[in-house]
Length: 114
Image 1 (cartoon, helix red, strand yellow):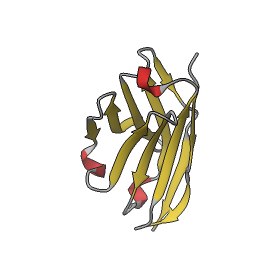
Image 2 (cartoon, rainbow, N blue to C red):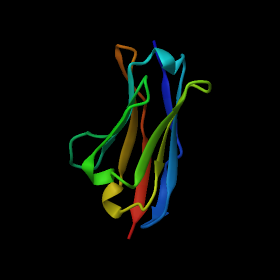
Image 3 (spheres, helix red, strand yellow):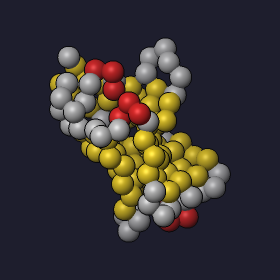
């Protein structure tokens, strides 16, 4: 069983920044893909960003140029740097890992005020 624990969420004003971290209970090098997803109230969970074992990244159009995903294999963490935050970024953010079985973290709340 793999455990993923997110941290770094909080309340920030529009235009501000937050850095989310996801700590895995095993080596993330074994994960083919790690990613961040989010779910806003009343909406479906959506992809935010992913990063492969080889370091290739993919972003939702809505966050391109503002968010950056990275992985630290030595610390078994995946990070999401979020800049120029907008109120529409408000959601619960979830870490996901394909080991290859799919695992989810418990989520961390990000709230952006206008």
